[in-house]
Image 1 (tube, one colour):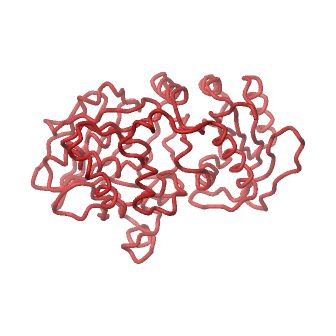
Image 2 (cartoon, rainbow, N blue to C red):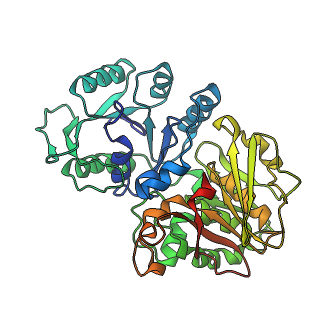
Image 3 (tube, helix red, strand yellow):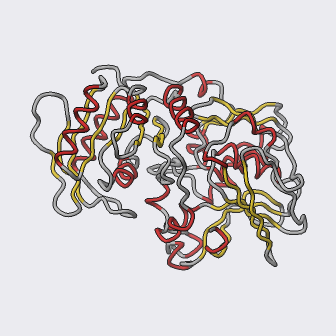
Length: 406
């Protein structure tokens, strides 16, 4: 097999790429791959799991500018995982050409035959190896086409509708191919070897069995067991956290280990130091804007990254705004895990409790709701997870009105 590691998933708009990836990722070993979004359209794997009405409320589209390109190209180039999947926009642009040049192979998913041919020509011209040519149809049967002997998987995938999971022999075959790539790409990376907290090892320790989601199975009720598993590190001066993909779990760890320096692993940056900040004034003006909504019971602090890109060198200035210290706080915003964790850690020092909005939980079954999905019980409210505070049970969910998230 040719040396492959960085694999693009491409095709025209409205072919179901996001839903396809959400289904594909359920079967790839969760600790062995990374997904990078090469298009600033505001979608992510969470958009297939979450309540679709709430997705429309919180989705933020970014800009396809040079800052975005620099960040994405760096992420692809420096990613250490054994398999890197890259989801690109649906047009053959100069930006996508730059992204293709950083990769080794590509998968085409297309709802139009003529577009499949054009994407094949595009990828071949740039020197990448085609791994799969897949047709996408809303209805019908998923079928693996006859092997042509050229090493390319061909077939049709059906039923890729947002919010749905599908069973497909085509996806099964593609997973087999991707697992082969993973197995050909060696053992532990340096970042994994130097970690004090390993997301896979913690999952093993606390008994997470179902890991077929992008967060390796971490759910709100795993917050307390995770914190108990890392409590022995409380006196360690520097703690490195590797492969924790859930923002609320990473934030809870950073708040718990407040006396330690904590570094979170980022796929494009390596380990990122979480600064020891406190809320200040109206909040940092460096690359961030803020909106504060105080209710009778809590304060919602929403942040937005100006221009869609946050320079990690600004992180030590990322102090959140000072708010009423007599109330708990809910932090909401789209950004890197290390940015959310910085805000959570700062507020954990001043507020009775701290929670963060987790949109992906809005479309998932909740044991606390007798197994019902969150949106079946709270159709007009978003789920937030308690991640710090002595006056609340960590990992429990609090419902806030969707209008506060707009």
